[in-house]
Image (cartoon, rainbow, N blue to C red; front, side, top):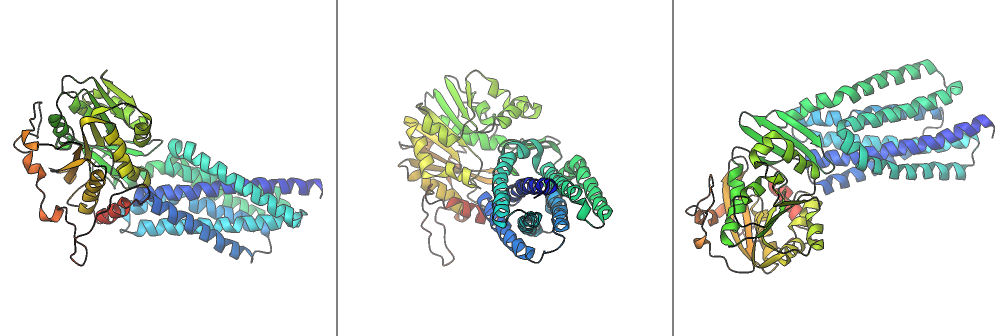
Length: 516
């Protein structure tokens, strides 16, 4: 092999590594898009991987027909990857905002399959070209595949630790599209002597480059206007944290916080939620000294706790430091939490709640569980028998736990399964629900090793909603939200506890909320 052929073969190996990085990034990006917009992260990542790999198989089959002009075939494959992949996130948000329901899912799955198919074309073409240059077939195959697999690892790490948190989904797609285009242009120049209509290919690359760079600089702003359509009120702040997408909206006096598209609270009625969450267990347990709050990074529950004298410590465990920092700094949230997170009694731990409970030796008088709904695998873990057993083990003998447990009206099977799961830890449970206009009817599960006499509950701190007279009414459930869930044959369902080994809550949650 001459020196020119050696340089070209090295370029092919580098190109295969770079395009595999891009392909892997697109694959996980599509999974993240599906998880954020369509929900059920496990389902979306499963579909993404399956469709992408199936597409690769189809693409590899199609590549058999590519026997001539291998370099041009590779270049135009990269052009297509750059355009389709680059505009994927931007168009996905547009579909979600303006297209009929369900079309966004169809679009995402089609794009995933298409990019997979184009990726499947890339490697066989590169292997054949390396062989044409003079590299033995077994060596060209092994080297191209090594570059591909090694590039896949790099792509995954880049997306998880830099691209998604720093650039977001829209800019990441355009940026990776630019990388694909750059590889194509580099190959175009290295092999220009054997390429016909070089100027046409170069002009096409320049045109695509202008589109992608325009998208890189202006696409996120346009996508922001698309995403605004998903929210009722104007967006004040949007941020991709290391763990989730955080959006704050405001209209007149109504401030709302969303995490991954799910409403966390509305300032117009959050007191109904937080007073029920905090004051019922605090009123039951006398002489509370130490309180653990799992979740609640907005600081509103902590602010309610600070109304009680005699507290010695409040431990707040919230995984995402960006949410807590935002709650400390944003004037709209500080108005709601009254700067509670800066109180010297509050010890903030940025840890996974499950891991925190496994690691700590502390015991608490009261544990408040203010976590997002169990709509993915990582959150489902925090609604299992194993998790509630850890909570029980960190309660003092007469301690009490209070957990938000979604809606007994919209998702009765989910609510009572959570209750069943808590009961499986040998704690006594007590059920409450309250009407919250921004959420609807919302449920809570209180639990303790000891029996609780709610008739003796006394609310001795200032509240806007809760009082002793209304507490008994919060325990009464209508027929459509009752514990006896009927199946299609009219028989009472046997609700099984949700466990790590047999997670049954996510599917029930998705089924219950699919029409809301």
